[in-house]
Image 1: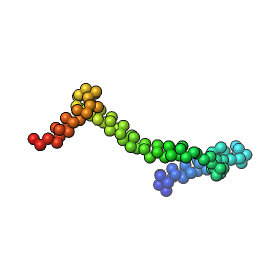
Image 2 (image 1 turned 180 degrees about the horizontal axis):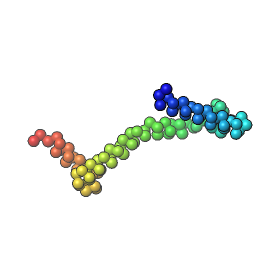
Image 3 (image 1 turned 90 degrees about the vertical axis):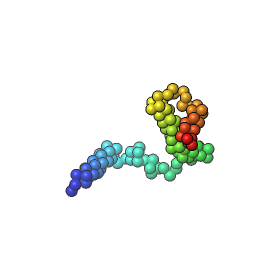
Image 4 (image 1 turned 180 degrees about the vertical axis):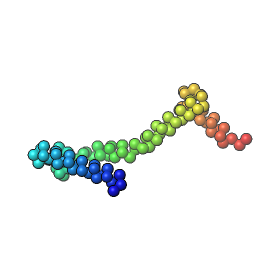
Length: 106
């Protein structure tokens, strides 16, 4: 038996012992964590607006984080690497000048 298998077996035994001890302490009653799983069939319904809002938040969290990281990267790159003033990062003229430098024909 490999070490990984031994660790897995030990963790299974520990979980089984903990569950047996918990059921002994409660006199066989279910714990608070176990009850909602069985009684979860009578779950409270959210309103349509709340469901739509939660769905939009779940779907938009990655793009929001990406935009924040883009702005942070532009700021750090311009101020730390470029050694330029931080307030010029958000100026349209700065980025237009960089575009002209990169894509000029000469």
